[in-house]
Length: 419
Image 1 (tube, helix red, strand yellow):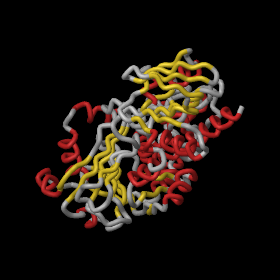
Image 2 (cartoon, one colour):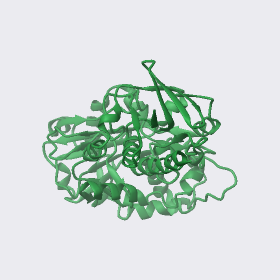
Image 3 (cartoon, one colour):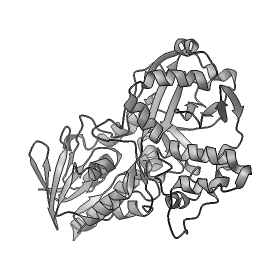
Image 4 (cartoon, helix red, strand yellow):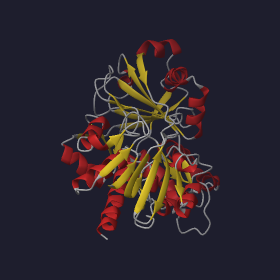
């Protein structure tokens, strides 16, 4: 009998399996899709000259677990730098210290407030008055884009608890060889125990005993299980538990799956360098594509179109993504549509919201759900352990959150297996 079954072979699942294997435990990994890596997905065969990320792209902030793993794998990173601009009707204007400007809005939030509310409700109170009108618009755009969130649904308390939520975005890096290199490194030691195309459907458990039934009707038995599936798989009961686990049910009701549209656009010339060779971000807060970014300080013919929250979901459901990106590229940079078509060589993207194995981008706390990730992370009877970015209190929505949650779950499993 196996010691542990890991459900899901994304960042959390791969890391958990590797750490348990290194500890001498017998592990099996059940992965629903035909590949591993989860929301880490890199296109390597493009004309961009660099790996093109279709999923996770940045390492945000200090990210100690990720950084330690990258150092171990000898994977180099490059710190993101450059200048911010805003586009209104195709006119680009420098934005100066944009993170500090938004911080003035977030500084007016408090997680000590008795009753939670949405971020939009907080903004409707016009914190900072007329002098911070532009900063409030930027802050709303940031929460919608960076968190993939609906401002009407995301918990203001959860944002306030982060202090200044822009810090992770302000200090970010890219992996030079792409997240694909990290996936390859993590998979190396556990490839033989991964069962691809094997969705877990039901977890029957009692203390010290787990029986997982997959979609093919096969049973997999172990002494414990680590569940790393994306939030919607739990919310939609695509994976069930018997007996049911109240903490999972209560926490998932208070969490929301965010949506993003992330389109990598390979161009025939770096046209933005005419404005500023160090152009990094172009913010378009009133448009369906709400931000564009280059690969600066790397010099590559690649610019990324990004949309978050409800607009992203609407764009993907509408089904004319590439047409919209072309139109928005022309609008943002003040050029004719024909010129945009001439510039674009190819586009690369993955529809995470329509991906049946994921069903969205990453999670955030809904109103009243600031502590829900911590609740979801609770282990049950030393037998059922939860991991994945949705269970991370401080780093939700990131690879770092997935990895640190896996490290926590592994620690719990090893303690339980010793008892």
